Amino acid sequence: MNTKDQPFIFERSKPGRVGHSIPTLNIPEQNIDELIPNAYLRKIEPELPEVSELDIMRHYTALSKRNHGVDSGFYPLGSCTMKYNPKINENIARLEEFAYIHPYQPVEQVQGALELLFELQTSLAEITGMDQVTLQPAAGAHGEWTGLMMIRAFHEENGDFKRTKVIVPDSAHGTNPASATVAGFESVTVRTNDQGLVDLDHLQEVVGEDTAALMLTNPNTLGLFETYIKEMAAIIHKAGGKLYYDGANSNAILGITRPGDMGFDVVHLNLHKTFTGPHGGGGPGSGPVGVKKDLIPYLPKPILVKNGDIYDFDYARPKSIGRVKPYYGNFGINVRAYTYIRTMGAKGLRKVSEYAVLNANYMMRRLEPYYDLPYKQHCKHEFVISGRRQKKLGVRTLDIAKRLLDFGYHPPTIYFPLNVEECMMIEPTETESKETLDEFIEAMIQIAEEVEENPEIVQEAPHRTVISRLDETTAARKPILRYDKA
Ligand SMILES: *Cc1c(COP(=O)(O)O)cnc(C)c1O
Image (cartoon, rainbow, N blue to C red):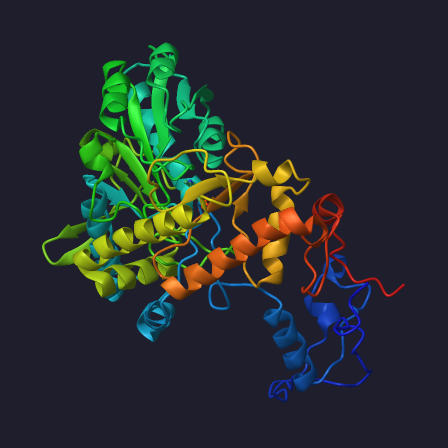
């Protein structure tokens, strides 16, 4: 089934039409049956659409216009940092000298690429206040797992096999407890207090000789900076645990403060968030991990080193947790992040954070009269509001999110974090103009007014999109991904 104005590519198919011409064969034709063993030969011809080049171009261009991306509109998805991806990053990543090198080329031939990686890891160590950085992990969650495996190796080296627990606040990103479990730990929850910060008394209760680490998302998913971070660091270190900093969203702290200075032993960054790598489509990411000195021996191998003027890989790392990714991470994303850091410079990066925080606070204060604000203090790069006032009038946060589609916006993250009822988590980012922020705020205010005057319009939204309200459960659980002629 499809909407009338946009037939499937199969429905456009006419026998004999071609969209691509293959060069004529200039070698003798071979008999496939002799070359490929019978077991691997195709028994049924694939049913492919037969369309002209123009048909196929229009088809996919039309579909692409239905997508929402940072290049097409405002995308305030909390905890995702959907900032603009500068096009200079793309130009640099596409330079032949970067794009066409092969990972098996000898290091003498790829010194420039290695120099870029080396400078990137050095910059990231400086930005985070850590002693060394690996660029291998392919995403944030992968970085978390890598960091925890190093912490595990460290404790085991010390004969500390009883440290089986990782403490994770209830306001942490969902990947934190998941990574702890995948790394073989038991995750223990520490509560958030009425200020939206980790409850220090509860932390004292759960910490102990079995504590391997505390994983902290900071600013936490409520957009709040953990004010008592030094106290927390002291509690965990006194108990012999390590401190892990989830820096996926470092948009609020660049050039202002550093996890290393706060006492953290491990940190990961998401280059595909804070450092402008394009994301959202499940494409390649990069989740570098920085560590303090005593964890350096456990870094994934090989590590990239500089011997005199020559960049090289060091494989002689007996305590390393091993490789976590083939070759040396997602190179193209690392090139983009390096380009961004060099474009912004140190002062520019600090401005990024100042504007990200300013934009979020501006929006939060302007929305405060219309939506419940569970935590009143200033926020960092994002903030959380609650739709519980609207819920009393029969409109749920999901409805508000759907209504935003009518205004051409990607909705914020909803129903996360779990500790706020009817939650909306909004992250405007620094790359948006005041006009864009104001237009979004006006849309949010109009929706709040509609809830009071005409709730049906919100409950039945969206009205102006290609497809109206979906049955969410069926769409998620039983998606139809295959075209059947019948
Ligand atoms: C996005 C995010 C992650 C996970 O990163 P992925 O690259 O999606 O694996 C972890 N922590 C926080 C705070 C995040 O925002």
